[in-house]
Image: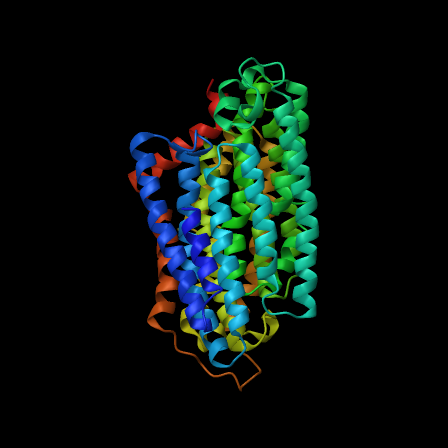
Length: 488
């Protein structure tokens, strides 16, 4: 799963045409998805699978996140072929750019797979650092002043964040110094830390979790460490923005999820780490709400929605109980929705020649397919029933009530209300307003484009009214891993 996409990315560097490079990229992702599907099936059958003396390890939590990653990469890779088609025809996407994009795209998939498969927390950190270095150059595939500035901002801020995560990883390893049987590389194996979590030094684990939460939280775009995110999402090509928001943010938050049961057990199951997650989640929602109201750039608007929804996921984990299940369910829903929304925003941006929503009025008349995609995804992001995000947010509210966290519930609902009013005030004219630019002609969507809109939108509607048994079971098992300390 790790090696195959990396090899196909290297092969893309040898291709003699932009189309061939993108085809190599698509083959790499498709092959990795097939291998990943097999691994997920084996995990479902056996509970866990491992390799290389358990340094590589898959359980229900990592398998679920891998399934989400595969869905995001499938949709965004297919969209990349659509997105760059016209640019290749108009010589706006050169062979050099296609080679670079394809190689980095496949390498990014491989590095995120490494994050999900790593039982060694040090290797997991290496995977996150690799995603920072690899994805940075995807932001500025189209080189201009704004994209280069966004790339450097992303690289510097996230590198500082990852350095914090490195310190947290070292502190977590140091907390094992008085535990018999945890020496050498075993001090960083997640399975070993999980089994001996109650014996770890609580002071060092608290310090470790603070560093880890700041470090990985920076890469996940949680406020107040989110400053890089609006610029990077708005300046990157739409397929890259879809991948960033659809899964790369989740990959960083996944690292935090791995530490939650260990920290809670080490600190006596008093909810110390969960309280930090709750506070950061609420703060992210409020910050996002404040900025969403005043946005005019469509991709920046969607970027602040990422800050909001990663905050909701953090809040769900922090509340515990059904909130953990809701957080994972929201992870899936947000990934599908945000992949669709950035794809739609990117395609509409190509048609209009801008992402300024004040100049994109009447999107439904110009492109029925992508107009439906952007409006449907915005409604889903706002938590409108019967979309699946409504159900996962409803479950977060239920978790807050169960935990008697009424202040958190009030702030969450208040922030959601502001987001609802602010984003809807942008969405209505975007869809049905009169556009003053009469030179823009209606564009008919292809079958592939219709499928890219119909699949995620249909899935979000279906999951809002019915949850398949296999998905509910997978979410329950994954949530149990995060709640392990609480259950004990």
